[in-house]
Image (cartoon, rainbow, N blue to C red; front, side, top):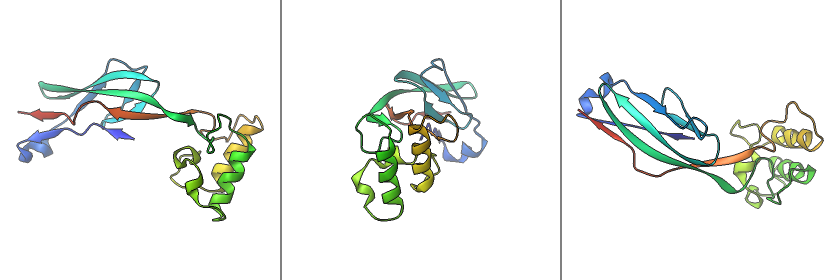
Length: 153
């Protein structure tokens, strides 16, 4: 998760500042009303932050992770029952979670690696179309290209 966080000067004006966030490259990123950026596909985009009649821009680049299939915790390029078994083993403490990529293990995106994630992977591997979480989807990382924008009046 990546946020554009503007800085207002003087600081005493911050409580009165209302920001609007936008991008013209909606196929690469989505920008929420509170400045959260979600990567949609690989590429570059510019986020414009506006406060009153002042605006600034920040460029972001969306790049796929090296091994980027959610659920493919052993990073062999395939989401299968072996990945589910690894997640199960970690969730019960039988093996350390350092054996795989944790970013790819939280399949249901609840912030916890547990048997629910393993279940999503198993369902995906069995070609179910429901309750598979994000298994099989691309994991995308967002990298800011420039520093946080500053909006000054």
